[in-house]
Length: 141
Image 1 (cartoon, rainbow, N blue to C red):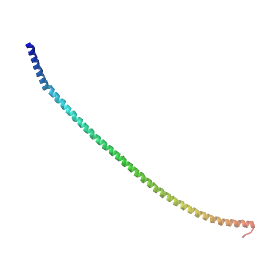
Image 2 (tube, rainbow, N blue to C red):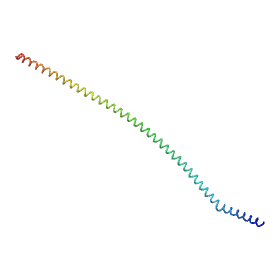
Image 3 (tube, rainbow, N blue to C red):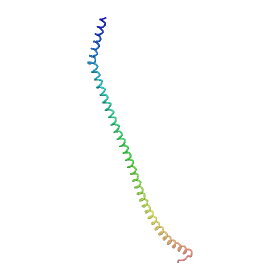
């Protein structure tokens, strides 16, 4: 039975020695590498979250700027439309006034020409009447 106990003790010592050596040579370096990888991964995740947050802030800022630019453009467009309408109304009023003036001048000229035509026709009517009367009566007046 001593043989079994001695073998058990030798195997136990071998096992403990193997565990110590494996721990020293393999497990500690492997755990250290795994810990370094975990730290790098966590650092990269933190950096990625930070960059994503910054990107979102930049995106939000650009969206605000775009919205403000659109609002400015709408205000400018509305103002230009108002100015255009005002200018159109002014030009239309000026054109209407000029057209009214031209129509009044044409009417005055036509009245003058009509009056002159009436006078001319009256004079001619008198001459025609005199001529007809002379022919009817057969004598010269």
